[in-house]
Length: 261
Image 1 (cartoon, helix red, strand yellow):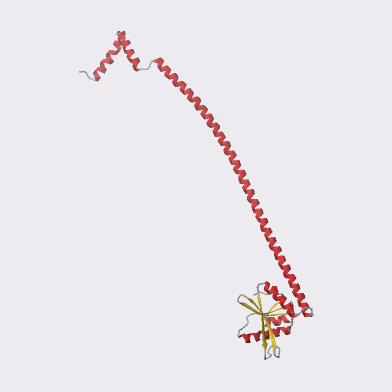
Image 2: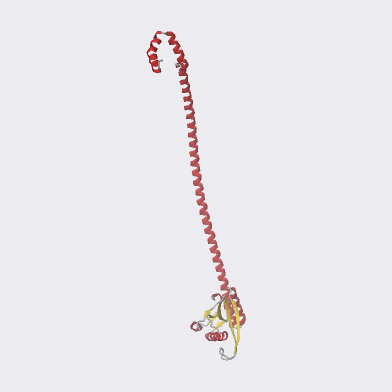
C-alpha cells in the first residue's frame, strides 16, 4: 500500500499531463474545484460587496466624526460659557463680599457713634448732676438749702454708681473731737467688701479736715479697727485744705461721680 507522500508525488507528476491530454479529466477537475473554491466572478462580487461596505463604513464614520466634532464644539462652547458664568459669579461674590464688609463697617461705625452718643449723654447727665450738686452746695452754704438735703442728694448720686451709703452716729462723751461732748456723725460708703469712711458736706475748710481726722480716730477707737480709706466729698474744698488732706492720707472728691472704690 502506497503512502501519502507517494500518492502526492504521483499526482504532482501526472496531473499536468492529464490536464493537457484528457479534456474529460480537466472538466471534471474544474467542476470539483468550482465546488470547493470561489470563482472569479463570485470573488469579484464579494470584493464589490466589501468595497460597498467599506464606502458605507467610511461615509458613516465621516458622519459620526462630523457629529462628534460638532458635539465637541458645542461642549467647548458650553465650557466657555460656563467659565464666563463662573467668572461672573465670582465677580458677583466678590462684590457681595465687599458690600457685606462695607455694611459691616457702617454697622460698626453706627454702633461706635451710638456708644459715643450714649457716653456723651451720660457725661452730659453727669455734668448736669455735678452742676446741680455744686448749686446745691452753694445753696447749703448760703442757707437756701439745708445741709441734710444736700447730703441726701449726693448720697443719691453714690447709690446710682452702685455704692451703698450708711450713716454712723455715736456720742463723744469725752469731747475728743470738738473739745466738748458732742454727737459724732460720719458716712460709710460700701461696695462689696470695701469700705470708705467719708464726710459728705456742701463745703470743706482746712479746719474741717482736722475735725474729720479726729472723727475717724474716734470711730477707730469705738470699733477697735484701723480705717484703711477715708475721704471728704464736697463740691467746694478750700485749696488750703488739700495739702492737709494729702498729708493725713485723706482722699478728696469734688463730685460723687469721682468716687472710686
